[in-house]
Image (tube, rainbow, N blue to C red; front, side, top):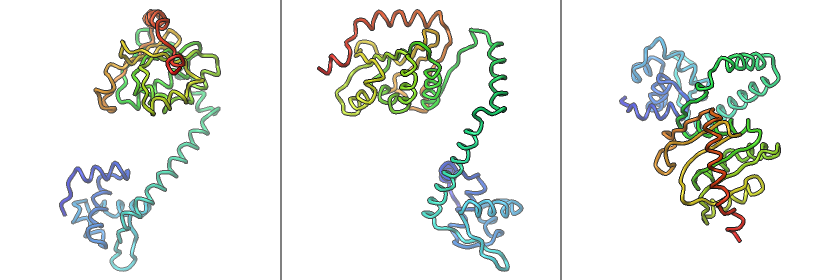
Length: 274
């Protein structure tokens, strides 16, 4: 049986299987029922490994063992496999979340925090910087920076990213707002329904003003930390989006002062809507 590597790789990503597992599983699907030895030959998997692989697939709900001599294996219909895989993934995710929740206030977390605090003391100021690749990583770090804000969060962004920020981290923005943090956003204001909905969702959290002449993606936190994306989000795939984070009060404060000058010239969104 010849199965393209691309097909096998897609199965691995979707179902969380290793290479031997997808080979044995697809071989069994092509036969319906077969022995471990037969599947080993079809899938080109070492016979010494085929029994372990089939046992793993049975636990995950991909195959059924048919007892007898010799032992045979029956393929579970793919649609049923999908449902079982979903249930397994949800259960695993719930278990992971519970374990992580148990870390809060634990001795282990205290030790980790102690290690981090000691490590930070050894870091030179100019080393507090880094590059982040992938939009998911960018927004994770952006949320982390905003969580730590004590006085101000300043955001200069595109209209599409404004919508994404509202969708992904609005709960965090709301929390820091309740702590008294001032959150200002400068973005092109559009009449599209999706943009207006996002605007309405955060109208009590953010102070938004319209900017059209400057196109940038930049975040300042407390006049100390800067995070900026080096490409327009219309011109880069989310997986290849790149951001630069720098902890530099000197540079961040200068950028914030420049933003303050521009901010006074911008029109508040509420006045535009009127």
